[in-house]
Length: 144
Image 1 (spheres, rainbow, N blue to C red):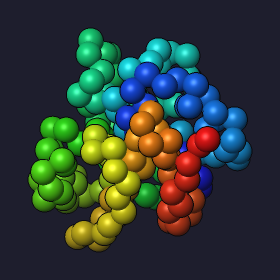
Image 2: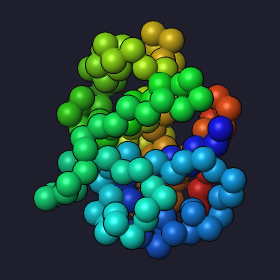
Image 3: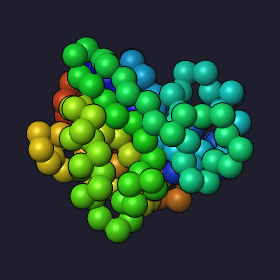
Image 4: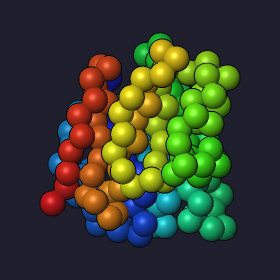
């Protein structure tokens, strides 16, 4: 299973298009919020709402079960991740998930706590960063 994970696009729609062109054979593309683009133009992407996605119809979070792995996808602003991860860790532990995909900080992060893998791909819009999750392996990448 191959997931392409982005976050914090902040209106840089062309960068998302470039990632979609670069990556092949993926099962799913996920955006962890602060999209600020016309999300209906990207039917292949699963989007959640970030704190900058004003008047958005998107869900604040989504739980996906893929190949026996339970993913929690959210932006992270409600869990105040800019001030630490404990609130997010507690929330994810209560949800009984295996992997958490989040954004908001614009900083890449990868750590495990309470047997849960936490991944923040950084900001596609500002730092050109995104992440590949493939069969449990995480790779941080950049789009030029």
